[in-house]
Amino acid sequence: MIKARGVSKSFGPIHVLEGIDVDIPMGEITAIVGPNASGKTTFNRILLGLVQPDAGEILFDGDSIIGQSAYRERIGYMPQAARFPENLCAGDVFEMIANLRGTLRRDNELLDTLGMASILRTPFRQLSGGTRQRVNAALAFMFQPELLILDEPTAALDPVSSSILKDKIRAERSRGRTFIVTSHVLSEVEELADRIIFLLDGTVRFAGRPAELMAATGEMRLERAVASVMRARKAILSEAA
Amino acid sequence: MTSITRITRYVLLDVLRNRWIVGYALFFLVVTDALLRLDGTGARALVSLLNVVLLLVPLVTIVFGTMYWHGAREFNELLLTQPIDRSSLFHGLFAGLVLPLSAAFVAGVSIPFVVHGALENPGSFLLLLLAGVALTAVFGAIAILVSGLSSDRLRGLALALTIWLVATVLYDGFMLWFTMAFRDLPLEGPLLALTLANPVDLARVVLLHQLDAASLMGATAAVFQRAFAGPAGLTIALTALSAWALIPGILALRMFRRRDF
Image 1 (cartoon, one colour):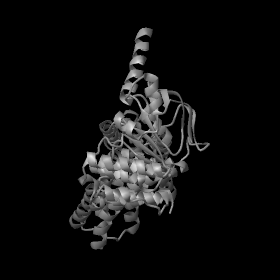
Image 2: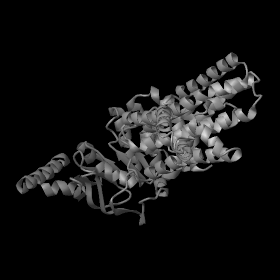
Image 3: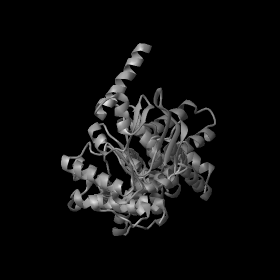
Image 4: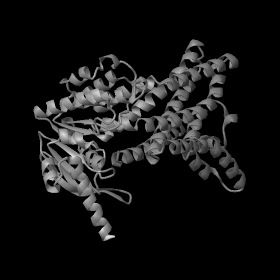
């Protein structure tokens, strides 16, 4: 279980996260949704130790992760934008991360299904953005982590690769792995997610099953349910103004 | 193998395949070879090489270091999502930057000296290599500090070039003005302090200390040599140079450990 308690973060005068309290159960796919600048990526980055919170605590199976690094052995991460040293090739990066993790366990399924065997020795400077993102996807799953954090995983992928990745997510979910996925594509979230955390203006507006949000808003689709919450919030803000 | 050596290994792989590093080594190879052919003796070539080293090593290191550190930002993010701590990553990246630059310099200068059999003054030759490597470490540390201070690549590059210009060109002009303006006052103390305040001048002191080239000394080197004759002067200059690498390095590490990626 991942527990966030009172997590706040500001960048200068902008309050990105304000007192986030959420529980993320293991073995499920939790999608973090919300409009641009709602704090989704910042929350993930705090979870990964890339961003340090101003206040609050995150516990991973009861242990605080703030300032720690060993817990990341249990995490695989696929960032939204893929950039690697131009003169290295994917084979070097896979070998390097395996070395850093000190592990021999490897899941090369995505490497095969995404057709990357032929580019393993090609320098990154010769690879397209989409191919680099496929490398990122393969890398996130490669060391069989318990928790996978995927930031807009299908945004830069072609439809075939996107579909392969979604199948892989479902297969690994059925094997008990945990996913935290951020996505703007709410149809994709509806398709994959067991739970959603809806962030708006740096606070949690809803945390639970997608069906619960749809029932609460009286909408049939997640996209409309989310839009409904956003409209209600906007109305409250304009009244207050 | 520790995390630091593992990271260093892959940064080395990346940097050594960079064409700029190869060009840097070739430049020193060609210049050193030409100087040895023109000057005839190793000692004269060393003196001629001195100014090339003092100008070029800081310039290439600070520019390459700033660009490399900025370019590696996203990859650093990926590495920081692995089970390694920030200090290990920092040290691995720093070693991966300074080692290939130093190796390119040492290879570019040494090969022509060995080929021409011009090592009649091995002490001076080794000091030249030591000064070049020390300047690489100093300006490598300053480059990562600059990259930490400025998240914008172009601003970082402008700051890096300004630091180089101040340390190499403007500093000499300032020294000239300073000695002229206060020529009636005892200047030994302030000039010694000013030498310690500039790593390029310190490297010059290290080299001139060994080379018999008093005519090339500026006011600071002459004062330094008078105040600290013998091995003590060399030790003080090298200690001060080490401090010039350590202090920006420690500041950059503190920023790296606290910063948000």
